[in-house]
Image (cartoon, rainbow, N blue to C red):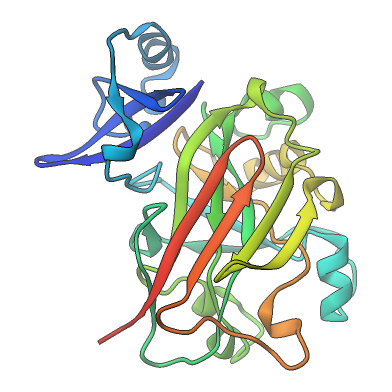
Length: 275
């Protein structure tokens, strides 16, 4: 099942994507649908109607107001190597906030305080049920499915201290979507993911290069805090980031960043400079 959130005149609405048409659902967004548990999912599966053309809809972040956005750094072996970093023993975690998130076709806002804005395509986990101190099969079952995130990174602010959050949580920088695909429809351990900047491929990798796999990340985070339906866990980015290139390359106003994951979809976002 493929779920999305689109904007309406009065707010937002959840939908189920069938091919190129969207069946409107009762919930205001995918997060609200997941919060209703199996009842919400059953209604989504069974909803009927001709639907509306996807191309006519203005897509919002697939999860509009997640209880938590937890992000993982240094989780692809080739990316760790390009950074010259040590392979970590435990996941490196930082957080984002609701106001960071934008829709899959919205404009990325380049902060006025930085000229070093980078791209990071990431597979993002969407939590479907409450989970605390889980492991193994229970951690896997807590996952509703997966979506795409561009963890746009403000590199000069990220490098100011040993804590990364300040370079990762700028407002209106983080596209999320276009859909949340249920875990039964994708093999999260073997998905191609790539980034294009104005059509030039910058990242091209596979989730098989992940150090900590999705269920491991869910298990790890659940030891720290209760995971809730609608939580998002971004699983890290592969090699090919702009800051690691010689010379470095950063996103400029007017450029378009396209982040794609096979079986899920693409984020296509033009960059604009903050006024």
